[in-house]
Length: 123
Image (cartoon, rainbow, N blue to C red; front, side, top):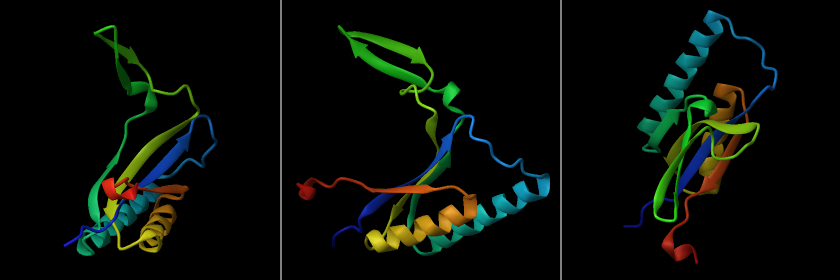
């Protein structure tokens, strides 16, 4: 039996982009909506993995150069845009994945990027 296609739903944050500060009540409501969405994803057998990431400044990048391991502080790309959180989901097709992305975008009030995982038979 073939496994359903897997998709990455990622929420991006833009450094320095003004966002309305949230009250404690709004943060609690958002957390509750996220919990409900994740419960819905689990019940549908869609949620493979999800997580929220620490700030980009906490990142480390590991490279191998001339056989030596080099570790640098900070994000991989000097960019204002970074992944803030993600879900890895199993979906019937792209429309199903986009439907989960729409629910996620509504829940977290930010745009969600949807990308399919590459499979060996994708060419």
